[in-house]
Image 1 (cartoon, helix red, strand yellow):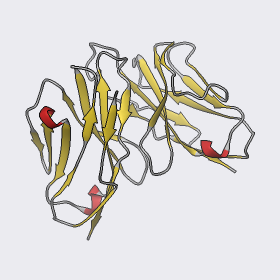
Image 2 (cartoon, chains in turn green, orange):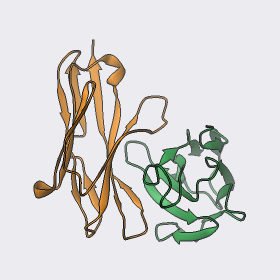
Image 3 (cartoon, one colour):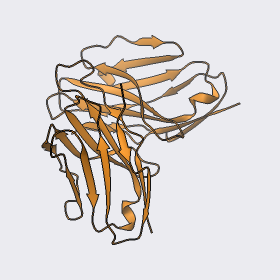
Length: 117
Length: 115
């Protein structure tokens, strides 16, 4: 089974520029998460999708961050404009829907490392 | 509130020593899941174990063992006879079944196993 795919792996931008990250979850996984992991900290949830609907975006800085999962499969996370404090690894994770085998285990992608100068 | 605390920021041990990583959680739910994930230097988070709130049976898997105690809200992880390859950051996580299944992670414990 293919894992969670993310791109790009690395991105360096200057502050006030924009950036987009892409995630392709494991096939059939209904729930998709975006986490932000700042160096030395644990992952922090940004947004959670169930199919193409948002379950939780309470910690997403909506003035600059946006995310979508239009067809309930791939997802894109965008930052515009970027700030220095956005430097972090952006992790995508997915899990099957309720009732499916392994429904309560998150599988993570390799992450996209963003450096804002 | 949903919260995970890992009081140990960094631990260093010499190879073959046993080491225990502590995790304390807070939850508002009666049904929840606890996890340990490993993040090696490569950066990808790797799932190690899941426990649900109704299963307090402790488990041993090879060199790994887990101690879940609801009375103290703790879910500790022990590595027996540690190896250099165990060097990584270990995260404890909590997911509440009745509150959207958001996964909350602790701050992590960096384990260094020295040869």
